[in-house]
Amino acid sequence: MKKVEDTRLHSPRAIDSVMILNKVIDIVTYECLYMERHPDLFPPKESFLVNSGKYVNVMCGQNSRGVVASKTIYVNEAEGILDATMALRFPDKEGITVLDAGYLTILRSALFAAYAVLRSGHIESTIGLIGGGKINLMTAAFLKLMGVRDIVLLGGRQRPDKNAHVFTNLTGLRVKTGIENLKDCGVLISCTTNNEEKDMIKPIHAPNTTLVIAQDGGFTLSPEWRKHWKIYTDHPTQLAKHWDEEFPYDHVGGGVLHPLYKLGYEKNVGVYLYGTITADIIAAQWQMADTIPDMFIHDYLENLKLLE
Image: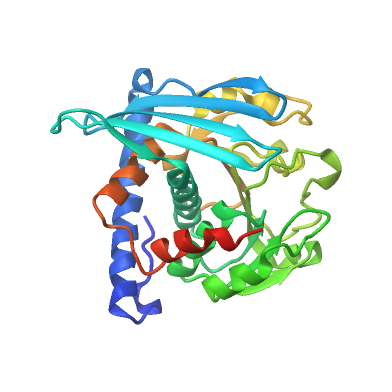
């Protein structure tokens, strides 16, 4: 497994953070393997529609150390509301620990995107971020820690440069905007609720991209990305169950879906992160143990309100 090069970062705090990140990467691999071997402990996420534009997701599971957890997420897309609560029962602790899990969703999503970049060996690439929201801002923080220096940020059709100034000011990364700059990207990371066919990003827009990563489905990535590429996911059973609703413009169902921990140094692969309780437990334990690299995580959490 590729490790982040400590020599790229010069401050002692930065090196400590890289060491912590490497440890978490190892934990992710192990827990993903455990999840595959014990599918009965990780039922697919359930979703139900409250009414138009409002829905609730529920998931639960038990990790390798016997931590039992459940998470409930409420989403109101029209008003931009996401509320989440997580309940955990530790084997060595009485009672149930309840956490406000809204920011944990941001943290674990960014962590798993970073994991995919590390595992596939694409750290040197210019990386395109599709969507200028909180999760991609946190993802940018991880990318900088890993040694990435250049990103292309693409917002919506109306304001493709939305929040670009925030990404620049908070990360110090070199940020370009505009769909024409996707041609420079070796990696695309999509995190957007946009699912209109006319706005889809196609391989012709990013001809040098050899890795795509999509959070919670692949809404804005066109079917061509999935037609011939090898596909990895954090929960193959879950994605197979919801394939048709996640990819309504694909004319055929999904092929073989490979578990995320098997991702290696490969090109022309897609990673589709559906969100699992395993990921949330990792993020929750990381936070509760007070081992989050405060050099960037706490600063970013405090500044997420700057996003439009």
